[in-house]
Length: 317
Image 1 (cartoon, rainbow, N blue to C red):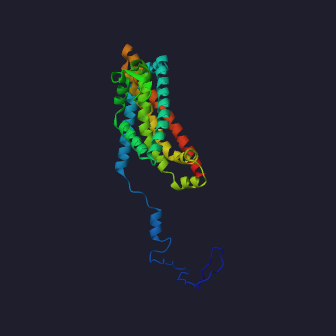
Image 2 (image 1 turned 135 degrees about the horizontal axis):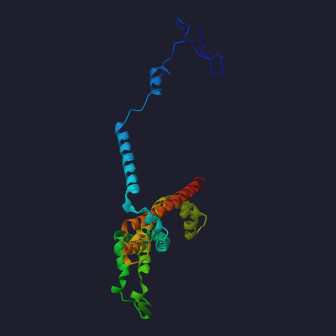
Image 3 (image 1 turned 90 degrees about the vertical axis):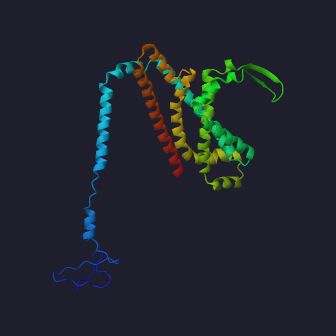
């Protein structure tokens, strides 16, 4: 008779198991009737290999070949004129347009975020008039294409030749020419801010809705006012849900500012067009603009990653 032993080498409680003719103890079966632990089933699982997937490897090989072909075309095709790209990449005209693009992006996103936050708060209020106004604004500016909005504001003088300031439905104190007031840059700012506000209003509203209602009720029980609750409790907790789509929105806005070139705003694309209209080097100059957009979007994506990581760490702590 051979007794069972515990991990410390001492005889453990329980019945003894008879040894076989060779003096070894036979393996015990599991309670569910399956093979004993360490048996053939577990041994096969330990040495099992994943099934080969030739289609997956073929697709990967095709992708590598296509990438190599694209890189080879970029290097060997003389039409790209990389020496021209390098010469104009930091040209004064290109950098001037780049500054305008960055300025438009910053102003449009900041103004759109502030206005969009107000619209989101109006949409979540209990006042039906405010809810209707916010819904109507979001519906209108999310439905009309950006190009149409820019052209509308650029030609607003055809609809209102003069604008006046005064009492609503009453006498006017002063008036001025709309054509002189609304330049191409002003129309671009107005159009971009109003368009971004409609987009960001829904992003901010979704973030606010992600905050538990109990947080607001607890703050109200402590006697905090509505603006303070929103600024100190709701908005910080909503930021982790707001930041990812807002980051994507600002990247899309940076690229979308190129559309202002149609109303003669001297952004990066417009300055690039001015240069290749003079020297007819279309492809190299378009590559200059492309490389700048790639660089800027990569930087914004990196900043977005670290900001999201910062807010996520703050939420966990």
